[in-house]
Structure formats: structure tokens, C-alpha cells
Image (cartoon, rainbow, N blue to C red; front, side, top):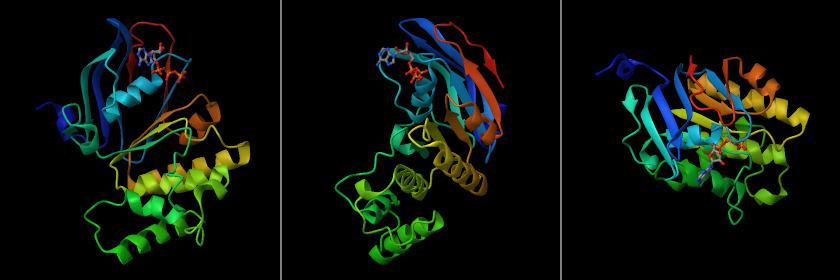
Length: 226
Ligand SMILES: Nc1ncnc2c1ncn2[C@@H]1O[C@H](COP(=O)(O)OP(=O)(O)OP(=O)(O)O)[C@@H](O)[C@H]1O
């Protein structure tokens, strides 16, 4: 057992990702519960690949060494569905054939069985992000910011132990972006979730308040150490 096996939060331990045999990036860092590490870098520098590695989706052309540990648990040997990671992407990706409420109820753990309990939890989640009464709506009738808030609550209702965010605010205008961003970081802090954020936006990084690391496109061994 190494010291990483006893650490709370998300630890990336001596992670090296290679593409076609060449090093794409390396990183060694710890994200404390409730704090954010922002990954920035040019297009193609490997930001999404790093999230894929942590989430368990790394594509076959890539090879990775090192470990990702979440609250001391080695994720690297676990299938994606057992990693307890919450993901948010550039697009909210709500199911278009379900109502807003059904989208939220779908995310709840199977251990929450009673329909009324599921509905209550989903309605409370909507109210928490200022969308009480929106449950019956079709997701397509919501604004971009409203959809992103629903996507956030859908992610959180699944009770993840860490959040991976890949440009989740980039479809929003400046004002909405600031509002939704504050909401995401605030809830992550309250729930004590470590957050790995990929962004091109310096204001996102400032608002996140944590460390920032920059990857360079096409550079072997980016040498991040945080
Ligand atoms: N399925 C794949 N097979 C082979 N190479 C890939 C694959 N997906 C991505 N790549 C390459 O891997 C490198 C890293 O891609 P990645 O998507 O991680 O970069 P990124 O920093 O997230 O880029 P962007 O900011 O444009 O989203 C790029 O050179 C890309 O062309």
C-alpha cells in the first residue's frame, strides 16, 4: 500500500498517457475534496484523454501507466460504471424523449426504489437550482443555462464521489456561464467532491479558485506535478 491509498480526494499518481507509443502527457497530482484542478491547453494536448483515463473510457489507441485513486480506492482496475465518477460535457446531453423530471429520476441509484421517493428527490433537485415547476417540460423547451442546470443535478443525483467536467459551460453566454459555474463549484464544495475541470477559459480557471495546469499540444512529457 502506498501513501496515495490513504488520501481523500482524487489522486493521479505518476500517470503517463501515450498515443501511438509517444508520450502525450504526464501528471502527478492530488485534488482535495471540494477543490478544483483546472486543466488548460491547446487543442490536441490531451485534456479529454486525461478525463477518459480517469473515467475509464480511454480509447484503444492510447496507453496509460500510473493510477487514479478516489478516496484511496484504485480506479484503474475498475470498469467505468463502478468508478463513482460524475461527468459533464459541453452539451447537457439530456434524453430528448423524457421529461425533465424523468431525466433526473433516471439518474437516481437503483437502491432508491419507491417511485414517490424518486419523484420527491428529483423535484427537490430541480428546486435547488431554481427550476421548481419545470419537471413536466420537454428538455428542448429549456434554455441552454436551464438545461445545463438540469444536467448538473442529474449528474449529482447519481451520488458521484468526484466530478469530471469537460468544457461544461462553453455553450452558455457570459452571464449564464458565470451563474452556472458558481452553482457547480458551490455544490461541489458543499458535497466535498474533488473536481477535474477542462476549460479554455481563463475566467473559469479563476472562478474555480484551485490550481491550474497547462498542457502543450504535441509536447511529449508535459511534466505536470502538483
Ligand atoms: N480515437 C483516437 N484515436 C487516435 N488519436 C486520437 C483519438 N482521439 C483523439 N486522438 C488524438 O489524441 C490527441 C489528444 O486528443 P484530446 O481529445 O485528448 O485533446 P484535447 O486537448 O482534449 O483537444 P480539444 O481541446 O481539441 O478537445 C490529439 O492529437 C487527437 O488527435
